[in-house]
Image (cartoon, rainbow, N blue to C red; front, side, top):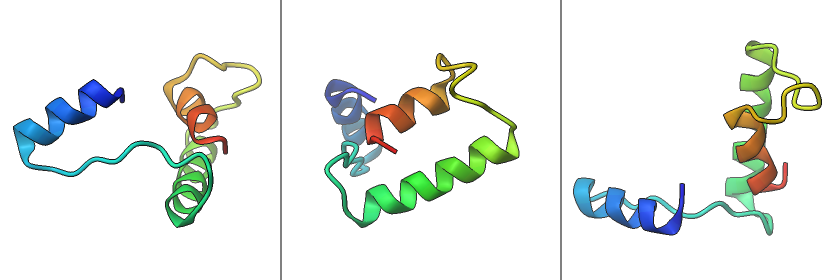
Length: 63
């Protein structure tokens, strides 16, 4: 989600969405582990289908 998209969502819902954490940290570690499980569960191979949303998100998070 873009910065503008996060701002709009936070304003609308009162939430506190944060940007991806590609430099490292516990949020990144947790996200990468979860998304890897999702890829395995849905049998997604990012080398064959890099346009999938999960693959793009993992690239942004540098997983």
